[in-house]
Length: 420
Ligand SMILES: Nc1ncnc2c1ncn2[C@@H]1O[C@H](COP(=O)(O)OP(=O)(O)OP(=O)(O)O)[C@@H](O)[C@H]1O
Ligand SMILES: [Mg+2]
Image 1 (tube, rainbow, N blue to C red):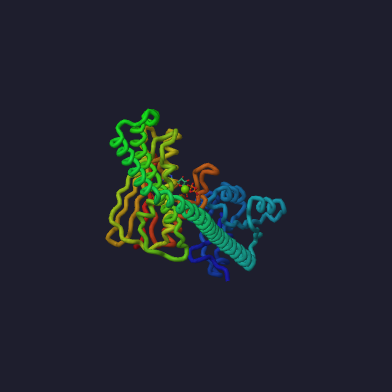
Image 2 (tube, rainbow, N blue to C red):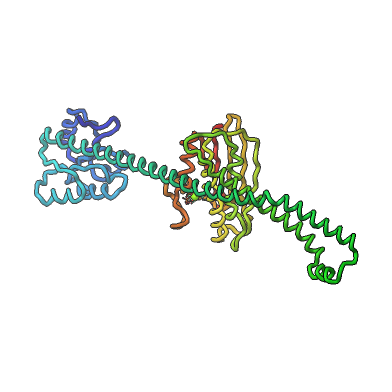
């Protein structure tokens, strides 16, 4: 049986005391809760303050009539969804049509038949409650679908990107290993050959003219010296590629179905290594300085590949915010920086703060950041998924916390808290 809900009530609007008492009596007899207003304006004021579930509205009243009252109620977003039933002695078709065209849901003729009043009120309360529950269901389903979509995209991103990165890391590994493992013997051979040359020089201080000329043309001393430097830089370069290859493999460590004990610092460092090209100076801005202050962290039992994705999304956003600050001239004389600090708190939560001194986030946008598909970036630059994925990984998968502090023009700090 449909009644007004615990807090809900019906608003009766009528200037005529006899009509009022008849309607009150009818509703009372069925246990409906109600309030009354005796003119259009006070009805509007009441309905704005406290929305009734249904309005019984008289047409002919002093001041603004029922039609005008209805028009105003329907024009106001606060009251527009309240169903209105006209009560009137004007039985002519024109008035009825006018009522419906203004958005009324029904019409009760005077003089009232109590049963009819109750029957109509009940039907419309039921319709309203069904509509509301339907709307709620649609909105719940839409949210669930959006979430499922984000999860799918996340898995898809993770697996394709992860496989690609792991594949590249692996493929680089073999050739760079040939190179780097051959550098030390090459260094030895070159040292030996150099020594041999020097020995020749000592033992045969007066070589033939052909040899003297070749030595002169070659600039032998310079070549010997430079050869060492070249070898050193080859060694350094191959070491970097080796690091990169191990970062790529660490970054994409396949761990989708199992948590592992991991060093989050290594995760952050791998991510920074992969983002290196975006941190470098370009024609618009100087190099982004990364300032790390790492505390002592224990191993954290987590999905490391996914945590790396969190670091990647937050760091990539920080770079975007710094680019935006500089390219759009929003902050002049900016010395672009990203600060990364880690610590463990007294409750054994690992805390990672990633802060930039870029554009910052306006207050009104803050609550929308973690919504799927929310982006302020142009098409092609942002999909608006980064932070919603990060939120799912941190909060839902790891039972952690993801917070943001930001002031427009001053920069932004994301705080990740993960239980160990
Ligand atoms: N460090 C930051 N500084 C300023 N604004 C930020 C920062 N991080 C996020 N935002 C804002 O939050 C929005 C949502 O970020 P999110 O990472 O979810 O999506 P996106 O970066 O726009 O796109 P995607 O990451 O999917 O490529 C961004 O569009 C941006 O407006
Ligand atoms: Mg992003």
